[in-house]
Length: 258
Ligand SMILES: C[S@@+](CC[C@H](N)C(=O)[O-])C[C@H]1O[C@@H](n2cnc3c(N)ncnc32)[C@H](O)[C@@H]1O
Ligand SMILES: Nc1nc2[nH]cc(C(=O)O)c2c(=O)[nH]1
Ligand code: SF4
Ligand SMILES: [Mg+2]
Image (tube, rainbow, N blue to C red; front, side, top):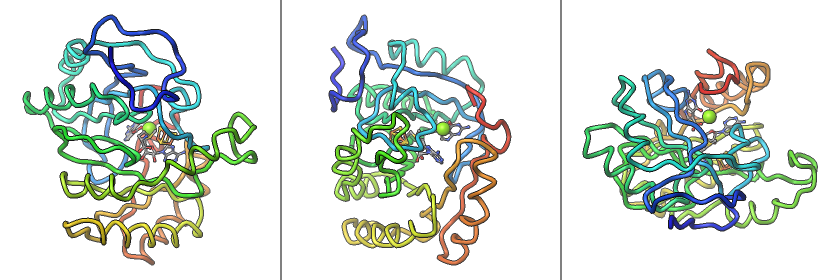
């Protein structure tokens, strides 16, 4: 049976038919919308289940109310191969909570795919990863009662305890090419970002360049991004970090499968 690193991660009691399966919320072909590879045609594999609960999570049905079908790794690879792309993004939810993501990534690597993993940086795994796209979660992501989409703040304490593991982030930075992609909700986030980058730099053997650090405006829809993107672009110029758009939101708003 697949083992999840976190028992809160999957609320659904359904179980897979085989040992080599992952809970998949969606699999689709689009353009990479975020980060250094924005614009590259990519197949997205979205696992279900997360060890955190950001109030703003744009993938609500992988975290707050996880839904999925179990898919054998063979079938996931076969669906990926139906698309004419050599980039694959493994995302979620939090893909690294699942042991089986290692086999999927290694098999994609053997087939010559470029793999990006979108991760919150709390769990390190040794796997074929061409780009670790690490998005450490700031205090402003915590689902307090005022912003919790379920309205009760029940997850605030667990989220706060788990959201940062500097050693896990440093291990990823040492092992893989990486980018650090911070969701910015407000200029006040910058102090925490600066502090976190200093702590990660101290913990790694690698040089983290300023343009490996990306600021991404918070916003699930074009309207929401209209309120945040310019401020975040100006913060990127002020601090010398890189700005990343949310190209898929600019192009397709919050349409499913984009
Ligand atoms: C849904 S998460 C899945 C991967 C992993 N759990 C993580 O958080 O990095 C994919 C990416 O979307 C970002 N994200 C989620 N909700 C967002 C929002 N409302 N605005 C901007 N970025 C968001 C995350 O920070 C992450 O970089
Ligand atoms: N087009 C597109 N690009 C993305 N890059 C990271 C995404 C994610 O949800 O992890 C994402 C996504 O959901 N869509
Ligand atoms: S860590 Fe990622 S998937 Fe989990 S709640 Fe936050 S944004 Fe959503
Ligand atoms: Mg997304």
